[in-house]
Length: 365
Image (cartoon, rainbow, N blue to C red):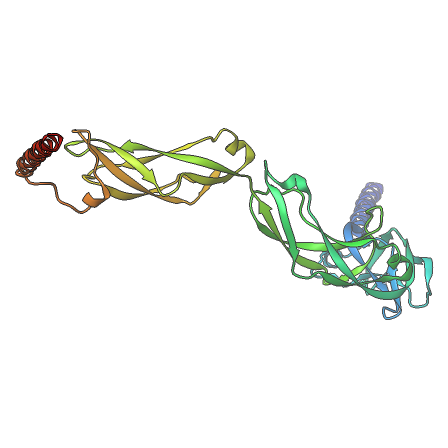
């Protein structure tokens, strides 16, 4: 009987021990799940624009940053991702100035229309805003071109704008500081020809500092005319190709003696003369030939084409005349005929001289 009781006590103790182990294990697992469920997620969103609410018909506001940084946190990762994305975001950062009058004020920024379960901390939390009475005035536009953009020897000839006057809106005090409205062209390009550019306008004070204004239109189109270096270059010609039978060489006469070369100053510097090749292959008599000048990216010529008169020099050291341009070569009988005519002429001349001498002698007697 005592043995039975002893066994019961042992098994009871063992059962209690297992029960305690199961209890503590269950509580431990339950605590882990609660910690995972309560985890907070956070992210940072940069360059969130500020929406300023004020009486736009009466006031002009300036002096504040365009964007702020917003730190978001939430227990719901999906909601947090929605507010962090530009495409799905519902909240706005607002500066409420509807109760403010002219002057410089500090205003607290607030995140409005934020999804429930998401919290936002704005950095900076407050901004300083200058509020002025609104005024509008017409100004002429001044184009600004940096001369360093022009390549070697090239110069600015003219700048024209598609709109020379614009409307400027700003605060009363700021308006008095405007020195000019500038159309400042890109200063990083390299220029060797005319070009057009769309330019954003800006208002500057006497020191060249940009002022906070609204310009209408905010952009103009500028057309820049460039003057390139020019140089008059003498032209010469050289014979190329195969000579026809009986021709010793050619004499060339161009319709111009010089051409105008345009290019950078360095490219024109060593250019003192241009020699053009004239192909005389198959040319048997005086003929006009068109020769194209070798323009490239460095130098261009005006005119681009020269008309050259190619005059053959025959092996008997004679040249053709303009009257022989369309005259076929003489027949083989021509030299004999010419000799006969020469002899006849000589005889006639001798006879005339003899008669004249005889007449002189008679007169003397």
